[in-house]
Image 1 (cartoon, rainbow, N blue to C red):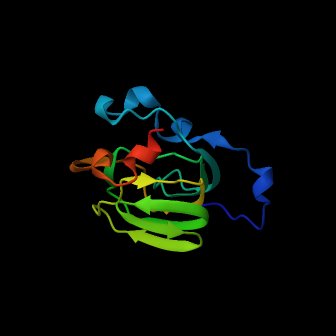
Image 2 (spheres, helix red, strand yellow):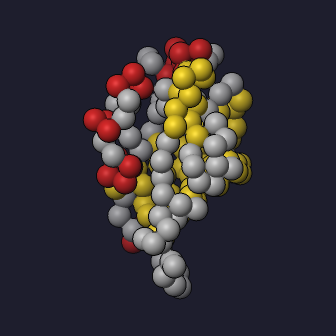
Length: 144
């Protein structure tokens, strides 16, 4: 069960690398070439279920190399900035809901992005072998 939080300023929660939450580059498939991670503020976590709510900040140009899916339900709110999910472009504020097993992405942010992300269990990831960033119209911009 998550603990009660009666109000806390986001600025009172330290930023940490998302790699500290989900593993570093050495834990990722080599062909994904993940070289930069975002930052996260963990808002709440249930250690018994792995559920977590967090703010994630991604720098301009950040992208994933393939579409991905998770074994748990994921809800995202793009609060600020922009993102491409596949070939569809969005600007904040925008809401997304991904049921378990639903592939989304690859993702790219041109201007940077601030997200509120909620997972209802432990983070895991399965990458698509068919839907890759190098086939997206934004890929060249992402790799400048």
